Each structure stands twice: as structure tokens, then as C-alpha cells.
Image 1 (cartoon, rainbow, N blue to C red):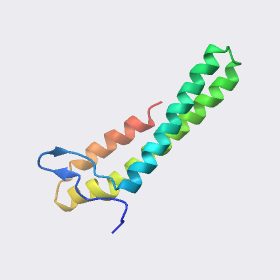
Image 2 (image 1 turned 30 degrees about the vertical axis):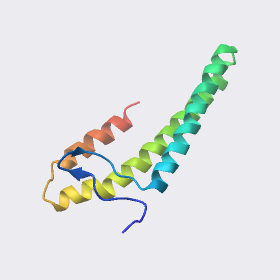
Image 3 (image 1 turned 90 degrees about the horizontal axis):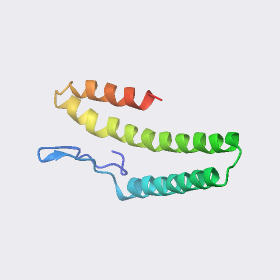
Image 4 (image 1 turned 135 degrees about the horizontal axis):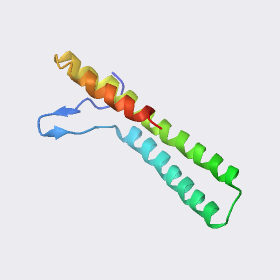
Amino acid sequence: MDENINHDCHLPEGRKSHHSDKVKKNLVTRLNRIEGQIRGIKGLIEKDTYCDDVITQIAATQSALNSVAKILLEGHLKTCVLDRINEGDTEVLDEVLLTIERLLKK
């Protein structure tokens, strides 16, 4: 069992994710960096920076967000989705497909 992931996603009191402290710290660190990138992009716009340079920074930020989503999706598949399938709940597959569809829309 992966020590970085807790397996308590599908609880009767509501849907919650339960990430280990290590995973949460990693995600929060990444999101803090992304937040800084967004502020940097805003500053570039305010300084009338050349459009291509701004677009490059936007692309880097989108990539960083995709990395966060990938980490979350991987943990979700390995825990919540697997648990629900093992319980006989195959409707979770439709949920995952919709989630992936949302991630792929750009």
C-alpha cells in the first residue's frame, strides 16, 4: 500500500479526499508556486511586456496546473475509484470519464 495516500475517500458523510501530509504539502507547494506565476503574469501585463513572452509564461503556468491535476487524478484512481469498483460501484467510471473530459478541454 502506498504510504502517501489514505484510503478513506468514499465515506457515508460525504465525498472527501484524504491525502497524506506529504502529498498535501507537495500540492500546496506547487499551488503556491503557480499563484506566484499568476502574479508574475499580471505584472507582465501591467508592464506591457511583449505578448509572446506573456503567452510563454501562461503556457508554463498551465503546464504546472496540469501537473497538479495529474497528481490528484492518479491518487484518485488508485484509491477512491479502485475502492468503489471493488465495492461493485461501476458508476464511478462515468464520473472519472467526465473528469478526464473536463481536464482535456482547453
